[in-house]
Image (tube, rainbow, N blue to C red; front, top):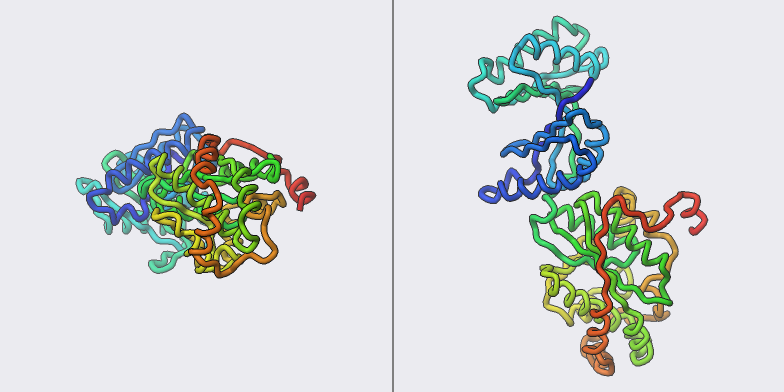
Length: 405
């Protein structure tokens, strides 16, 4: 059956009160960007629903993209029928014949926003239930937990029928919670942290530290490709490449081995804060998980956080590694994340880093560096690139990935 539109139901927007219209407007913009490759669509956001008229566009492909837009509770491919019960019966029977296997249970669920329509909710349920009982006696009416629900929405412009309800991505529309900088390492954890940030409505910018010749172009491309994996949820993400070679070399030359990681991370955090403030970002996100590595003990976090007063948010802080891996597999970043390219967090890594570094010692060793000069030169060399979901930065052929692994 040719569906005429997709009926979108909002998620947490229903709790937003006076801000509701702003949230719906943001969701409309995000949906429009996500579906930009389908030019025939007509998107009509209403107070309680969003109508996406297909106008001949392929419903399956549109719904696949729509399923990645945060702020949507669920959606249904629907058929719009004029307000003539004879035509409603005809389309309802055709829809059930095509989607309801013999012998399954069902119920009719009507919502009516047009209170001028002759049949109220109960009358519409009974009317269609009686009609289908006559035409499809093999089907079983079941009011609680049926196999299928025939949804009927009576609105001013038409009556909409659907038998499928597809769960959306949930969360809040990206951009409604402000913008933040995400420290993207290229490992498993930080892309998952980025996914969770987007889900809570935060528009993120990726900050990635790059140290040639110690890190390769392939490692940089990997980080960009991970960013591209997250862009379907938002439409585009800015990737900020920060040169870090001079800083790492200077730290290695002047800081004792046990504090190399602590001082490097302090410099990364300083630079991220400076970039965030330049760009109007409100917070810093990262992929730290408590106790996972030496730099992620509470003592290390305290010593590193010492350099900033900007809020630092760690979405995966209390998750164990298997939970994070499961999320990475779900959002299709895992295979990329485990590709064995060096990044800034692994080069010059000492064999025995301090797991309980002292803040005052970190400050002392850092005093041997020209912190202001190093930061000025690093910030002068940053490169910013807008990344979209269609962008490709490396060969993701599965055979190539398997060979690298």
